Structures are given as structure tokens and as C-alpha cells.
Amino acid sequence: ISEAFFSNVAPSRRGSPVPVVRRCLLLLCASRPVFLREATLVIQEHPSTSSLRMQEAETPSGLATSEGKYDAKRFYVRPDRLADITLAGLGLPLSLGFGAFAEGYGVSLEKDVEGEYAVLKAAGYALKEKSIVADFPRPAQPIELYEFQGCPFCAKVRYAAALLDLDILFKPSPRESKVNRPFVVEKGGKSQFPYMVDPNTGTEMYESADIIRYLYKNYGPGEDKAPELLTGPVMTFGAAFSLIPRAGKGSKKSADALDAPPAKPVTVWGYEASPFSKVVREALNELEVDHVWKSCARGSPKRQVLFDQTGGTMQLPYLEDDNTGTKMFESAEIVDYLRKTYSK
Image (tube, one colour):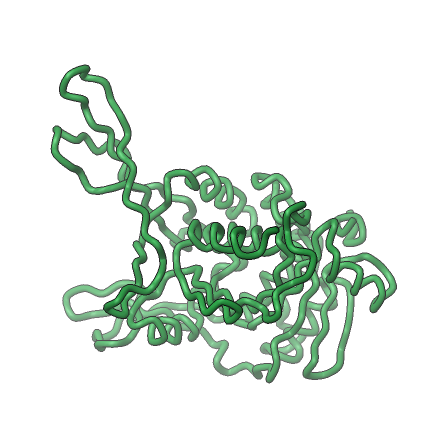
């Protein structure tokens, strides 16, 4: 195996509703809840035929309302995307928790302070997540990474970026790419991914292990602290197997995608371990839309930033598109928006 090889539903209504499934647990990794979404499916007995039918939940738009809040529902999965989200989560245990937590992740129980984000609040106390990433050097400009969703070597670099809480300007380079893949061939001399360009230092390089060590040296606790699981072959196989359930999604450019990328990269707040973030990244890759990824793994200080920015909503993913002025939550609605906006 080589890098070159991989490069080529709702609250009950009247009628004696019988809730059958209340929660769909998509991942519990390393005995820690990485994410939890709820798909409420209501099976209702029909009064005349005694048959059972499913009631669909009202779909949130993900957009801001007139009151300044967002029409977003935590623990909600749009029924027609339940299979996608489930499959996107199936491979996550094989990633051994990489992509879920920032370096030095931990939790603390503190007195609740109004306006501060916490993973859980009760009885005047708040369970807060923390990490050590605030102590690391931060790049002045986002690091550029040419890669694609279905590449396990690319996934390893994304895991490292999540650990270090780095914002990355992703340049999707799927098969049939008309812009980014040809650029890498011209710039580096071969069609191999990932390919990193750091505008802060002028460094450009191939090879996932070298990129991970470089990131830890320049933007982390030191090159010697780079996880051996990531730089070695173990997570190459782990990442490869974790991608199998999605059957190559995000690896080939869609035939109806625009030939040229939008004038400005879109911005997405998310984290690698979330299947809701993953399906959005798949769409961005298939449409070859450049995007700044605001990494918000567990323990990231950017979770508080997003909480403040959206008036008290902390839900991932969250999209900002300066090309159209659109800002929205809800992965299913974001994917629909991207395909409508950036397809022919």
C-alpha cells in the first residue's frame, strides 16, 4: 500500500402514537461519547386498519430566524439521510478515536457561568471540556492541504490537524479534478496525496508521516510528540478500513460539478470524527470546492468561539459561505445547499 496508489423523527401527535426508536447511537469511541445524534422515529397505529406507519419529523432549515436564533435541532437526523449518517459513523471505531479529541483533552466540573459553552449543564454546575492546544504556536495563515476524502494517508493528516486544532485550507483533489489535482502534478511533479503547502514558512511536501511530523514540530508540542500510531502503518490500515463503509464517497469529482471553484473558499466548522461533518466534506470534495476547515474537536477553544458567534448555538457542522452570504447548521441542509449552489 502506498500513498501514490491511493492517490490514483418527531414528537408524538394524536392517534395513540407508540415511540419505537428514540435514539440512534452512532459512536461511542474509547468509552467516551464522541458524538450523539437522535433520530426520532414514531410508529403510529392507524385507527381504521391497525397498521403501523412512520411519521416524519419536521425538518429544520439550519438558517437564522428573524429572532436571531438558528432553526437547528440537536440530536436530529433527517430521515432520508439516516443511512448516510449511520454508514459514515460505522468506520469510526477503527480510527481509534483520532479526529475526535484535541491534544491534552480532559473534562472538569465547574460552577456554571452564563454565556459559557459546556458539554453538559445541571443543578448549577457545568461539565467543561479542555485541552492544551492554546499553548501551541498558531499559523498566521491557514496551511493548505491538497487531498481527498477517500484517501487513508490524507485521513491521517486530518487526524493530526484535529489533534493540534489547526485550521486547514483544504484543496479537494479527487479523481477527475480539473483544478487542484493538475496543480499538484505541475507543482510537485507527481499525482500523490496528501500534498501540503505552508504559506507561513514556504514549505511544500508530500508523504503523510513527514507532514504530520512537520505539523507537530511547528504547530504542536514538538516533532518527538507526534503519535507513532499516526506516522506508522497501523493507522494507515485503520484509516483505510474506516473509509470502507462509505464506499469511496468524496474520491471522485461529480460530473455535474462546476469546472472552476468559487471565488472564495467556503468556511466549515466541524471535526473529523463526526459523521455529520464527514458527509459535508464528501460533498465538498465531489464538487471540488475549496474550504477552510475550522477544526472543533472535543476540547477545542473554537467551540466557545462558535457558541458566541451564533448566539448560543454549538452544533457541528456549521457553514459560512462568503460567496452568497449564507450561514447555516444541519448537515443534510448544508449538503443540499452545496449541491444546488456549486453544480451545473
